[in-house]
Length: 257
Image (cartoon, rainbow, N blue to C red; front, side, top):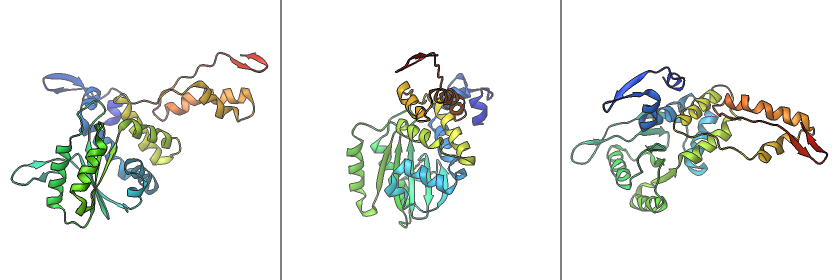
């Protein structure tokens, strides 16, 4: 389905009385973003899974997770009294349980009250055998550090850890790692980066001097420029659109075409 959306072949759908393309629906729905990002995790190699967990949670937490056991999307967790809550994702590892609350780049804001309700519901059903980590992904408030300290203090007896991550930083890290991935890992990273482009997240343009300097290490100007001309095709295959136009280069020996 994601492939059809990316290529404009998914048609249209009615939502709130409007006829929208699936591309526009995708941008509006955090559920679709959650499914694309975390639904691809099991397809990564063990090494890539570990690296992705490090990008999300930091090295200290990630290295203690152990093997991935299960991923549940929008599980219904009963609350005290009546009703239930549906956190976006619950990821099970051998020693840890990751509760994920996702807010898309242009969506709603993270809420301390929502975090509390979801944690309370999770702990009602938890057998206390696993340490819980709350991952708040996207649109965290300026006072997020205060929220983290508050929650971790409230659940100190359970050793709760709270991690806040933003899409821009995660996207930048994924772009950097995607250039080193291969095989099935590369395909997963490609899908992630293409999906992120639907939400307006794209690779930031680098100053030309930052692009040229590594290429000049080749020792020959013409070889370096040839290498630069190949970059757009290589990056486009990774879901990163870029256009490089070289009209002239000024060197110590003067202008060269």
